[in-house]
Amino acid sequence: MERNNQRLVDALYRFMKRDYSEDVRELNRALAETETADLRSEAPPIPFTGDPWSKVKHECTLLVGINPKWHEPGSKTGQYETEIANSIALINQFREGDDGAFAEYIEQRKEYFRGGGEYKGHYTYISNRFLENWYETETNLLWEKFVMNLDVIPWFSDKTKAISNEKLVDEYRNNSALSDYVNIIEEVIELIQPKRIHLNGVPPRLVFESVFGIEFKPLKLIDKSIGMYVGHLIVRNVEYPVLAHNFGKTQSGPNSIVQWKSMADKYEAWDNS
Image (cartoon, rainbow, N blue to C red):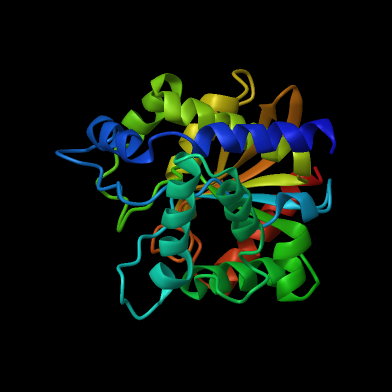
């Protein structure tokens, strides 16, 4: 196994071994706009979605969202039964000493798009926009080879309005769970060596600017209507081009096919300049 591969596995092992319920209780206090940030303490965090070991280096995109959406048991999406419940069981087994459950959990995350059980309410929209603008391939190969997904807050919630962006940035400097998660982000980036980092939402942009920003080269706002920024970030001494925008499929971010095409054109013009 290559050294970076093992470092990622080791970082995942440490992070998933944490007492996730206690981490969430602490973060709910620390990140709250008012009383609680509404993160769900009954489920472990999601460190990434898809297979980082299958990505095409220098051609793939790291797509960073806000956080995984919680699905109640019995809801029409079926995601609790197909994904969340199994994650809870495996990580609880792992924390009780079963390393085989950890290996099975990592395989579950790697296989997410291969079995057809992904949360289509989110990922179908995203894959269509990437296929229209950046990658001429099939949907299954898009997630297999070209787009790696993770979230800036890896814990589940129903909504994100209860989370303070300012406090989130501060906690990325001070919270031990988030410090461990930064290590995973860095290992994933070093492993896949993406062509660009794509930040989908204001929280990812603010956090990545704070953690990986270049003081003399801040991200540049080029389309205020969708909060579109471009620029560069440095992760472990490597500089990566960045596209950031307000969360897609919302009124304040790129929503329509036309808006995504315009955004892609603006990004490519900047990247080629």
